Image 1 (cartoon, rainbow, N blue to C red):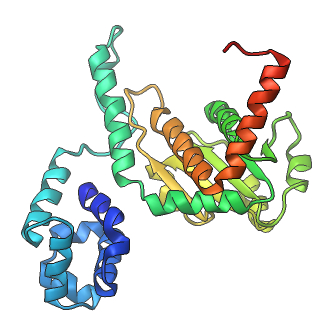
Image 2: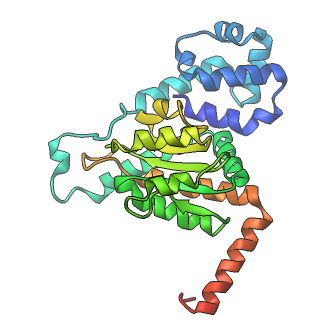
Image 3: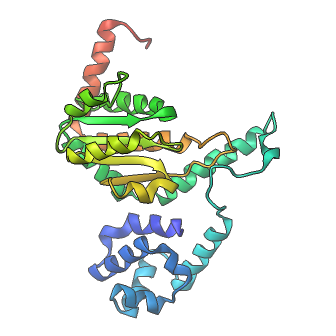
Length: 283
């Protein structure tokens, strides 16, 4: 995963020529090909000339394709195999060093946001902006993050609801959903059996699904989601880490606020004034 190359492409994509954009899209879609193909082969796959490929890499700040390949190889070598557990039983010992825990959480965050595509986050924010209603779903341990997402987005827009907030109310809640509504799904393993029928019904109502999930689930989630925001969730064996999940929710809310503009700002001001009138918070 050539994450630094991805970031450079995303930052400069709109400034590239049409031919360079074709090559850029190929690089985004087939990042593993960097280590197994030559610059000439990659140019041929994108349907552009070798001269266009040379200009493309120079516009991204590289001397040539060899520098890109070297960077990709370094990133591959320092990236550990993905998993929920990154160590043996000795790492589960009581009193695990704070520094080791912090290092792993920072790695999860760094790898998540190196690989997260900004255009996908914007697409998700645009879907939410156009949605009549925003539903949030989190089952099991992720229910807490569903509540967090509902609170954050309700400060920015109207009609934000948790799907199945009341026990046994799945049918009643699903009956209120409709086309162009957005369902924000937050899911990590183990996934309850109930999730599949809920998602199947959501698809029949033509809701737009935005999924925040672990990378192992990303490919399956693409089958039913308009947008998937995959996160790294490696941990020391106590189940997946939620750190990157929470940060991804926050990023999506910030991106939505920028998309909504004045309306989000006005809603935040109204809610702040209501809190002041109720005197239910400390300044």
